[in-house]
Length: 206
Image (cartoon, rainbow, N blue to C red; front, side):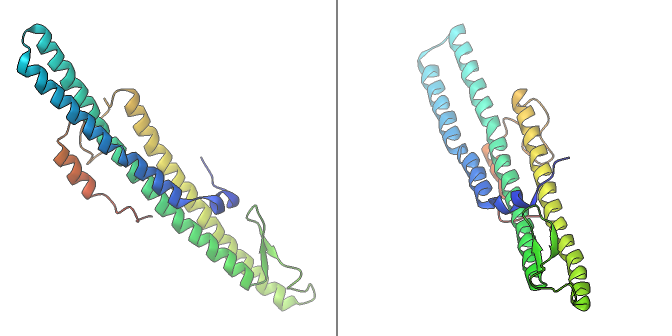
């Protein structure tokens, strides 16, 4: 089971993940242009070439178009996966910031490993009431920290599993069935666009 540490979460860059996802989705444009180019080339060949070789060439071009078209939903899904990861990391980092703020207000210290302890410079050992209150605050801050780290770890696992699934599908030529709702390889562009439009907003998160 993967885990995310305190320093890792502080260093995490949700905007970087969003940009990476957008870059993957942006590949659909060049992909569509290449498919269009193959379609145009096929039309030119068909207008002045006939026979078995022409049929074989047309079949090959059609196969290449289908292969390229089948990649588009995967590119869009990578964008969706990384956008959702970014959203969930944003929530986890906000919880982390909240925990640190509460710690500071209660006279506590949070170390680089995420440990929480009483700040001896602000809470004197002889101040029993102050130490008792600080002890209660330690428990509360530690709980918020744990929730933030657990949330980030869960987001990481979900994203990794979904990307692994896409990688396995790519290794088998997209032969495995697509997840529910995702258009099958070779689906019409209008269907892919409708599916994409209905996905979770990129600013969302869990």
